[in-house]
Length: 440
Image 1 (tube, rainbow, N blue to C red):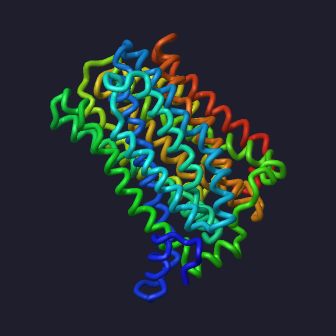
Image 2 (cartoon, rainbow, N blue to C red):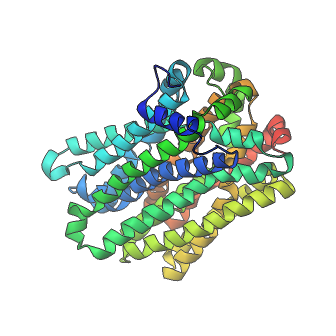
Image 3 (cartoon, one colour):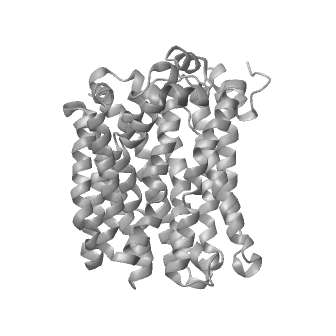
């Protein structure tokens, strides 16, 4: 029966279950997770790609390309800064009105913030207000992402067989390369079929419209799971219920900090193989952007395979070992790989394949690290906060830092940010004995 605080979409999801048209099975948790994460990462990558090839020309056309891109990248981390704020706001909604209502509001805010970017006039129409509005929409995306945490990855990890925890830990991470593949291919299509003036005028806006449609589909897919009585009870029995953010931080601050730094290498690498290479090609070469976007699509498929491989490796040697070994590999990668981007098409492909291979193996187990670091009573809220901070510290400033280092000291210096993330992971895994015990 629908509650007084439930939304129409939540009522529809409950009605589908109540009619008995389709019985929810445990395997559908994985489907809901993948659909939800793919939608979120599609939104994420649509904005990320536009921050390189659209916003410098539309929002900052009065600046030199390198300066315009840096200003565009300066707006980029606003979403990551706003995520913890969104987590706190939406945890209150979760406690008061339920997970279904929270998800509905969060994903509609995410979709609305994203689609509003599609309607954003450029500098020629609004002047500096266009940058201010873009910043506000970016903050809206971040607040919404903080509220989009549904606990399904934690539920997957807790219900996984003991010898298959690594396998199930990688399932939520599949959404990242899937979102990248779709977003990159969509932009590549418009870039290759439209004249440059038409693309900058209106063609770039269509991927943002698609993002809103995907959010609606993802919302219903996730509501179909979280509002059903079986899974509501499962969330409750596993103590995956929202705790107060302030109380969780006070009691679990050490776990939150260590948990945020444990996957830092993969989160730092995340943008070093997606956003930064695109900015390098756009600013420092005369290559066709649509062609490089298809190289990113290739990298996305490599990342998919590597994420699956991470599940197999983690169940064989342990998740902590996978994180540690890949952090060491990422540290080595940071020392030479950025120079590959200056080696022409072959160097770019090698950089992307190697980078996505390392990213997939490390990122595939990053959610396992977050989930395993908390006692039951704090897992739902603690995992959300830890994820927020890991994205902020590891990924939020990566494009800006890497581009600034490149501009000041040369391409090889871009690996400095990546190296710091790898060292952060190795230090966190080495210092936290309790985390080491839980991950193994």
